[in-house]
Length: 192
Image 1 (cartoon, rainbow, N blue to C red):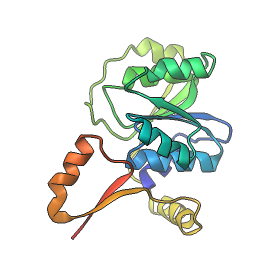
Image 2: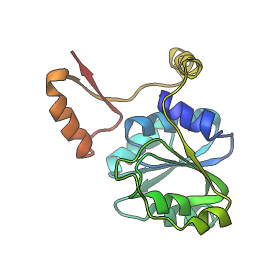
Image 3: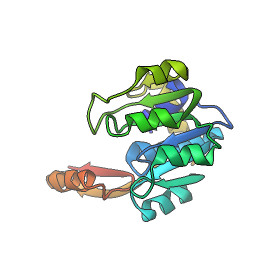
Image 4: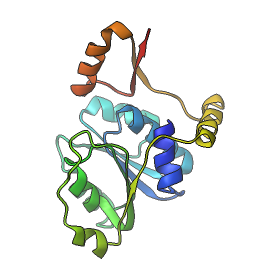
């Protein structure tokens, strides 16, 4: 939750009534981001790779569901927003989704990133960024104050962790395989 909180609240400054696109929303950061965005009062567009994950995202509060394996998410976002785009994109994927993430943004939109799982060097046309006055925002882990803010919401029951599976540390290789094969919804927890 701390990574998602810092991305949405501290760095992107998500506001009530804004539209936000969360890529890979079935992952640990994604499931937290969906909940935080709904708590703020945003309309949530969420992408995932399966209908099962999309249904679970609906249960978490996502408003618009996009299967990125069967449709191009940037075109779908443009269609559903009457070509306007969204105010914020959460992209932890990197090179593979970068151009489509930029194309999903409204003028003066904010792309916030905390990862590059598909590569750190995306191709881009910088003219698209300055012409549309886009903001590219990097983000990392939260501060102590942000941690305390998140803990208050967890204790109050306003946010809830999504745990796919708890596994012994000796099964770390299996946990990694599940993550790499995108068979996880939420977090995998390893215990000693």
